[in-house]
Length: 279
Image (cartoon, rainbow, N blue to C red; front, side, top):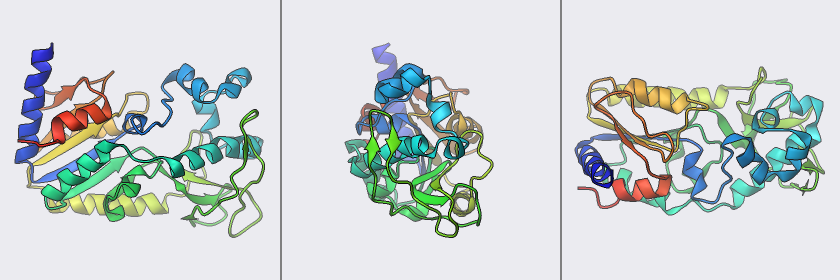
């Protein structure tokens, strides 16, 4: 097994060396090495938020748009704590290695991530080359979508009672008196305003057109199958000409075709083994 994975690492490094363009896709597993909570399953979620286990709330109940109407203090207790956590977190060494890699590739890259934490921009990646497919906690919108407007989240009065996971102060919409909410695509979300991510998506599509005939590598890091957005894209793109998928995932490294490479490694460990001092 060890010999097999070493062979796959050598092959992955070769594919990166030959690539003319890099697509980095990153899921929740990318943030674990920075110290962010692992919400995998109810047990992982409740470990990060013990009071919610008593209430029987799991991730899908808390990351739910209806909660901002039913219990805005609880909704903002959850997202307010996450916002503070993401503002304080320092991106792990893997981000630096990836940044060095794309610089060696003449900065011909794009980030496609389901993470809402803003770590890629904080780590120094060009915000014009980042597609946050599920939105970002660092931007706000009206919870009732009174206008198709999204604005920078400068809310600083984040005081959360961690015994109850409730916010003491709630941010308000810039245009009406309703509660503001993060511009994140949640479960049961009919009011998500997609203007910001639509612009990011357009830039990604334009970049793909420019690089249509170039040899590309998709570095997929920590993208699980529970919310399979990134895995579906990686599987689909790897079937096209000039695109190789390198999937780094300690629990679900399986790939769907022979041209792809699956590595059962954690995010930072995989990045270091595959991207640092590549061939």
